[in-house]
Length: 259
Image 1 (spheres, rainbow, N blue to C red):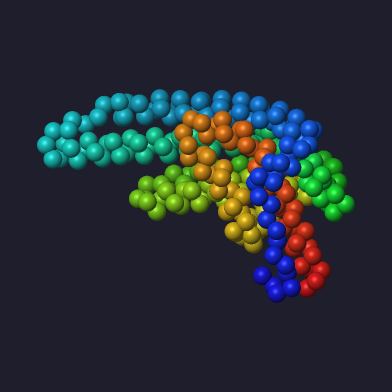
Image 2: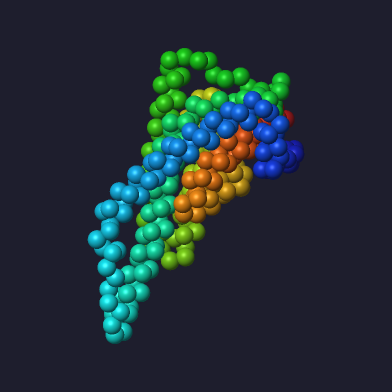
């Protein structure tokens, strides 16, 4: 950090929640988005899990007989593989469903993000990019890029998850930064940022990105109730990340002027 740049004041999640609850309009819009996000995520999650379980049921239905030392070893290995596959498949299914719900509900959350930033920034609010057909196409392409990037992250997470101990840590880190990227898309989409620029922001603000993405990443690891929780807190996280993004952006602009 340059010596002339003052430390940026972090906005806690509790303050972001209070900010949202104080605005009836933002709160009402958030409730509608919660219902939409839950319905889309839950439906896609059930379809994905049902398909995966149907394809693997034959292998996991019959456990190897625990007879003799070798039999117990095979039985133990089977149990480890079964539960590892169960946990990882649920995580992957959740993120696939989440990516679909995220893509379809994105316009609503972009509006929520923009309204929250405008209310918080006041006169310092940066107006949206000009509304054009080209801009719409750019937004759609960038959304598809993040969705495709999410599939790459999911495949990478599934691959490294089989590394004992370290694999689980890497999975959490991958989903933490990807979660931060997805939420970052809301305040940056109206600025027409490219995917490369968004990833560059995450690199510059690695610690902040970790703090912003760790909660949704941890929630995604909780089977079944992750769908309920993530849908419930998604508007709060959207506002929370938008406010901190706005603060960090304003600090960077001031630092540039002072340089």
